[in-house]
Length: 458
Image 1 (tube, rainbow, N blue to C red):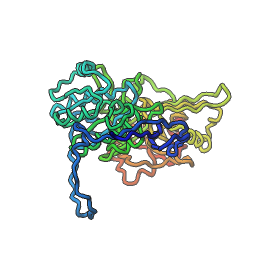
Image 2 (image 1 turned 120 degrees about the horizontal axis):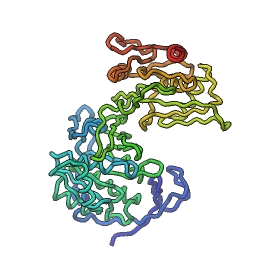
Image 3 (image 1 turned 90 degrees about the vertical axis):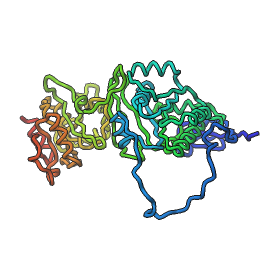
Image 4 (image 1 turned 30 degrees about the vertical axis):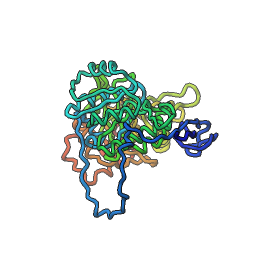
């Protein structure tokens, strides 16, 4: 009979301890340790562990002696997913997808499974019945003869079916519902999530089959389960968006086979998720007339240039203490920009409420929209509108200087493609820039006051 033992796990970070602790030594949180029963058993038939065999001990090799071949990838019909993954699905990769409940994770995975008609896809669901999945598939209106559904939560039973079925791609919905017989703890616990993920990782690496795992998130927005889960997988994707809005963003937070700054944008329709090939058109609202406080900034997300709309509202603080509120933009950077405008620009914003919003639900970290934010705030403060044919691409320093940004050619080309007549950039970006190669008028400035004189004092 196998020996039964208990261990204590931190529900916040997954740290394991032999006894209860008031404070976690790893993450510093209080009262997060929960006792879980762990029982190790001998590997049984049907577990992927039973296929392990004796291996020759590894020996060190010179890096010059290692033969390198480009990793083969499976190209999907979803170009947004291909971009986010770095060019397609790598064989043997373990991919974790997280997002809020109801955001569309299962819809995205089922849609991909149905469009990969040339590959045998096994969709394992522990949350929905076969009839519920069939209902969603009918709504998506995609037909495939190679998509198979399995409703099961036991990993041993799942691996029995995998050995017989031999899928090309495996999708798990979700990792928190799986349960291994090697651990006596309940499904969704720290030890169960860790054990099930380890079995799936072993299967993916030894068989070369790509595995997608859908994961729940905590109330703080992080992936539920131990932090080691994110270290185990090859790629972590975050599916974001407001359930009350139509647009969704697929963002990479970790990728061993590509860039971690790529994003894909989808529109949620009744018939499923539609790829948005030109996000700038949806991120810029269509207006019949110009309003004060609205400007357009050119930013980059990975290799993709985007033109986004910045909206500002500046009004007198009627409740005494001025409010500083930003949506989609770093609040600390907003305070810095307000200090620069007051110190270097002479605008009295100390007694003003300032509200800043990035349209479209994006969260922006690119400093190249600093100039657009500055002109948006001053435009609202002075109640002078900026023409909707003008955009901005420059960083602003603490001295009020307009600083250069990287890959300015891509930003200018995107603005020209969308029909803008004028773009403001830093004078220090002029080196090596062929101005005559563009039809758009390129305006250059070295200080904020140069921009304000031309834009706001007309």
